[in-house]
Image 1 (cartoon, one colour):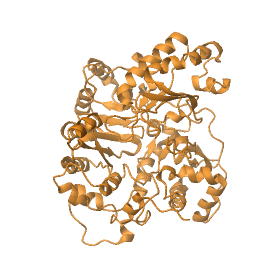
Image 2 (image 1 turned 30 degrees about the vertical axis):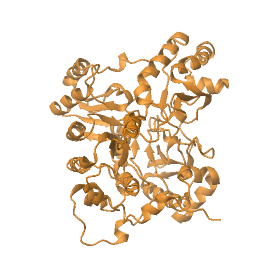
Image 3 (image 1 turned 90 degrees about the horizontal axis):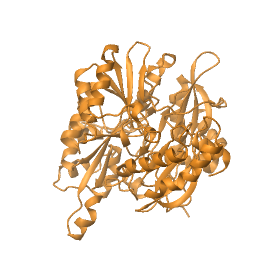
Image 4 (image 1 turned 180 degrees about the vertical axis):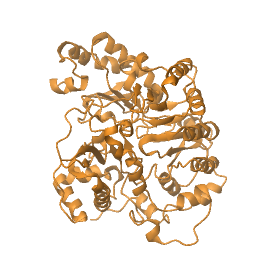
Amino acid sequence: MTKAETEVESVKRSSNFLRGELAQELRSDSPSVSNESEHILKFHGVYAQDNRDVRRERAQAGEALDYIFMTRVVIPGGRLSSEQWLALDAVAEDLADGSIRLTTRQAVQFHGTIKSELRPLAESLDAYLLSSFGGCGDVVRNVVMCPHLPFDPRHTDLDTLASSISTRFRPKTLAHWEIFVDGKVAASRESDDEQPFYGDTYLPRKFKIAIAHPEENCVDVFAQDVGLIPITLSDGQQGFTVLVGGGLGRSYANPDTFAHLAVPLTTLPAVEIDELIAAILSTYKDLGDRTDRKRARMKYVVADHGIDFFRAEVESRLGRSLPDPRSLPRSFAGHDHLGWEQQPDGSWNIGIRIPAGRVRDSEASQVRTALRALASGLRISFVLTPQQDLIVTGIASDEKNFVAGHLASHGVRLLEELGRVERSALACPALPTCSQALAESERVLSSLVSDVENTLEAHAPQRQPLQLRLTGCPNGCARPAVAEVGVVGRTKSTYDVYVGGGPRGDRLAVLLREKVKLAEVGETLAPLFQRWSAEGLPDEAFGDFVSRAGLS
């Protein structure tokens, strides 16, 4: 018996290329939108949410939910001018909750926007050549790129690669600009012009692409639908080893879902990459599961049928065979891009730790004010990192001391002040805004970091920094499935603890213990820290030790 397609597939097909009834609903006085429009909004980079902190209270009082919206801004490679940063800062102040949220995909999110402010927000972005279109939905998402690549003189030809891939595979429909920006409907439209590549049902699910540095894996290239690792070919050309089929999300309610690492597909010259990605997307568009969104990601096509089958399908769409992939880099540990680094032109970059990616002012740190002043007063630019941090670039040598002092005076803690766990800890937003969250994440990251930091100091004081990632559910937005320690929300008050991932991102963590209270995570890890301290090889990372010793 043929399974029926999901409701979302039907909504996409009948949406008139992502228009639906959005324009009319955005003009209405209702604080929310219909279920169908919620699905369409995602393609425009907007999630309909409600404040879950007051959900029960409002329900008991017979009141409507506190409806709010999250907007995700697409920033290929995470690169922003100072003018664009100031525009984002103004949006945070005027149209959101006062914060700029940096994501693990080098995008920016705004939280707490009400429906009537969605159009002004989109117009503000458009004025500075920014957009949320394609930030969510069943399309190619924000393309991630190692922040080092634009500054590496060996790879200057990769400077605009993330932007060019994003432009090539962005949906062509004019719906976003009609609805959110200028309000003008095109005089004539042809379906072939509206969506020549995706068709009217787009992809089965989201699609993620990352470009790694050939010597380090800050982008978690093995966790992507398509991962690109630069390589110099034998004839001196720039090429890429291409990985396919990665993805970390799963569902507690569906045991047939799982995390999966991307596997090598081929190695090709750079000039052939766009054509290859198009063939991969076509394969996924045809073979991805449109009857079950829990198993609709491309990783299941690769995992269920195998890489040989998948390669044959891609080759049939290319009309030629693919060469075998080259060997992957041996030393590939991720870099966090924190601290000072001088560039070939003599200028300086400084990577700043942004806890949980939340740029906001607090009693402890006025980081948003500090960054606004730097963007206003200096000729600098910014790069978001896949660790939810921020790099300030283009700092002149004679401005270096001023920048360091300015940040310190605003309570921004620099690299030398960070703890061994704090330095790389990631968290997703989770409660109170994310509808998928089962437990807290961002709001409890600080307490979890302190707990694990203290435990590490007590049992393995001489060991190297530890990679910790926390999420409120198993969807994996902070990539806990490849972390040395992954803490994943299971119930409202408990978490599953995973260990054994690694700093190279090429190994999945395995379950250590289920349903652990957050305050007990440190003591759960303590025996492993003790053994790491006593039995680990010199300079051996915790995840590597756990895997080698078979403790996970």
